[in-house]
Amino acid sequence: MSETNLQPEDEMPLQEALALEDETVLFETLARLHPADISDELEQLSSEQREDIIARAPDIISGDVLAELEDDVVEDILPFLDVDQIADALSDMDNDDATQILEEMDDAQREDVLEAVTPQDRRAYEESLAFDDETIGRLMQREFVAAPEFWTVGDTTDHMRVTGEDLPELFFNVYVIDAAFKPIGYVPVSQLMRAQRQMRLSDLMQGTIVKINQDSDQEEAAYLFEKYNLISAPVVNETGRLVGMMTVDDIIEIIQVENKEDILALAGVTDAGLADTALETVRARAPWLFVNLLTAVLASLVIARFDYAISEIVALAVLMPIVASMGGNAGTQALTVAVRALAERELTSQSAWRAVRREFIAALIIGAIFAVVLAAIAYLWFGDRQLALVAFIAMLVNHAFAGLAGIAVPLALKRAGADPAVSSSVFVTTVTDVVGFLAFLGTAVLILL
Image (cartoon, rainbow, N blue to C red; front, side):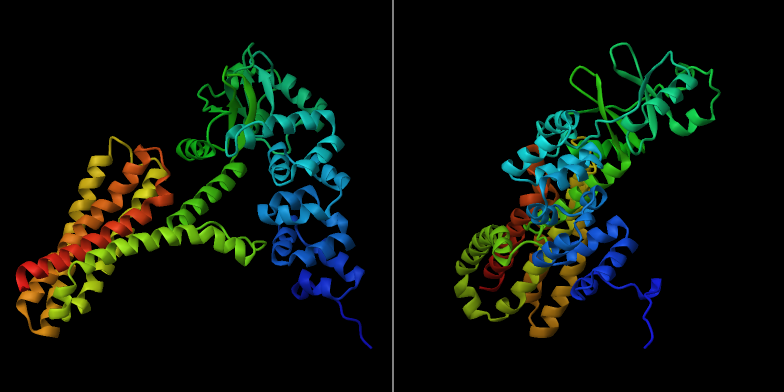
């Protein structure tokens, strides 16, 4: 009987190793996986399978694995972990990642974990948790490297070697501070390593520095990183004192979260994680569908006002959905572009009028093109020139209003302080449906009856 050796190309998926009930195979499978890959595998397992694997291989939950897991999976596995295991994992994580794990705990478990960590770590975690969610104070790393401007390169490198355990795991810049501990510049680590020991930091530092306030929203920080091409930035408090830093790996995660939120919000849904039940998914989606139902009823009321026209000219019922559908798609296109431009700060109060004018002119041109096409279809189909004229006018009017609504609605919501990604689609759909039906049926009554 020959032995079966698992070569790299024959690596066994974690689910299969778990099903074999063979501890050796399970440990060998886990040993080959990168922490990010372990996190991906855990996200594909059921809650029962996660509980089983944690019971059989508790060391699988390291700080690196926890930092890579989706929030809903972290929330699912936390009850399977003991307090000391969580505390050990948190001690291996950056402050910002540890804070995100603490956010997912219930109050009782969080208090038990905070009792198990060192007093220094507890103080740092509590300071982070005191900030509002999605603010930089909650997300920043509290470990950083700072040095006074009169230090030399040798002073700085010697200091870093002595305090090595207290340094952040990953950092790119040494921040130069004044006597009040306010950042006045920075020296890239790559430049520091190439400089002579006797050179002063004041002679090496970059004097132009982008600082982020600890009370700023995470979206503001992401915008600054993108605008100035940053790889790290100091975080300051209300007095300008250096209190932390943000690095590009944290910002990439923020950008992904913000983009996902915007995409889901445009569709009127929330994220459905693998740990969510069908009932939780229904609760998240049903309210917006109810709002859409109300707007659909409004559009139907417009149709009901012209029921006599539809009963006399059946062709209206055939062509009417085309006008509404084309207008809805045109409005969605303009809306998507506008929401993205608002998120990237490209669409501002200074450029708003230019953008509105551009969208209106583009909508008129596109509307005219498809109005001609629809008029030709109507004439070839029904042989009625007046009906073709009705289709032409309705398509043109609906496209014009769709283009205006697609950009004006998110601009108005932004000015009102609301998130344009959340509710714009409902208003734009309402405008295109109501205007489309009203323009088509109203024009038909004036011309055909």
